[in-house]
Length: 82
Image (cartoon, rainbow, N blue to C red; front, top):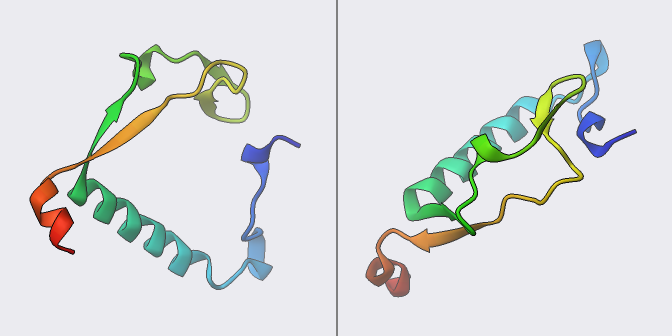
């Protein structure tokens, strides 16, 4: 089974109760990262140019090269103070 089909919280009435808390925490972490850093792709690549595969859902092709990114601090002076 490909890793993208793995459902760590389960399905149905016996799904993990922490599922919603974990989803909120993931969003909080993502917002925090995006507020503190600019995200830039390497080698001039972008999501639109990546090869896609349509199985159960549309997703990037796992056999092609990955999208490499770097995080650049939005305010490097402010980051050094912490």
